[in-house]
Length: 287
Image (cartoon, rainbow, N blue to C red; front, side):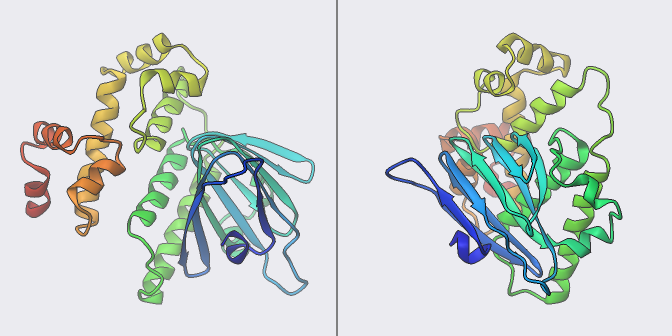
């Protein structure tokens, strides 16, 4: 499926049993996949004939981290971060265990029209903590939540594709904008929470481990925001659940709850009622 989607792509793993899954969508000229896998090495050979339009690959890390290599350049991306890679030169991606990415292949010319100095942005890690990075991440996730829409009106699909390219251009353009003093770690922390809301094991300890800081540091950052790690995570899960209930009426309450890291539907319903003053079913019906 990987090689059928992106010509020349191959996946290698040292595991005897390689349990992975991949979902695939298309949005006009933009091809998207969402792979989830254990540790592996992904390589792509040269994929450009003399008359083929040049294309780019966006690798946005949803969970875990990876090392990206192309020619003599390399970069590491963690949860929420992304990198833009050329497809007309071989590249390799070393995936960590428990890795999940949002990947999109897009026409280079369409993005270059928005960014004349695009070459300077290739193979450069862009932090998911930046406002543009977070917005792009949320937009891609929203596309996946709606499922494959390739059969819809081409004009509508083209418009959504333009929004995607505009957001990507904005995120790349503003990637060098400085963070507020003392806010870099906070931004990384909140970005990591957004990327891992689906994980029922998301805790203070796991956040601290992924960022390489102490649990006390994580607690202090949230205290400065007037909350606690667990309260913030719950609040963001409920916010996202409310969005999901309206965005996709076909999803059951149970599916929404489990997608956002709740192991107990009754607990989810109680928390939702406390936050919004009504049951999830009532909330959906009133919107």
